[in-house]
Picture: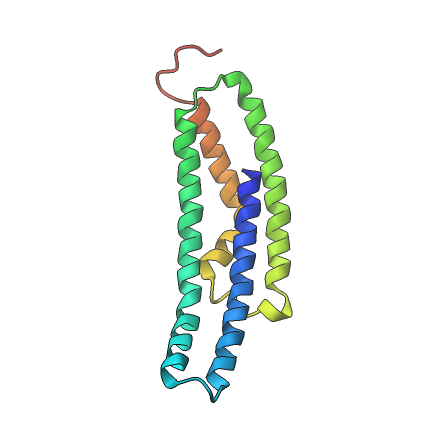
Length: 155
């Protein structure tokens, strides 16, 4: 799960950098005298729609990962004795998520990316509240894993 958090951070960072590159290329294309009006129009359309598409895709990937975790947790038959390992794993996950969320806050506040939080509102919200979201998700996953109806033996 820690690797998925790191992957989400890389995806969010890549989206910001990709937006910077797309806007820079679009500005150069719009100012060029050698590119036709159709090319300029296509470049402007791509640059305008990229942020909303990536923002929605990030939300769907994040929601899908959470749903997969909860469904997978339901089908795992683990002994309640392993609950402490789940709690320790959750603490490690939250520590890494806090570091990554703070890093993303610093990254998004950099001069080159200062205005992109408005272009990616869902991504910015998730990354700003990553620890709280993962805490709730982790507690739900632990509850789903260890508190199921029909458990035959406590050990």
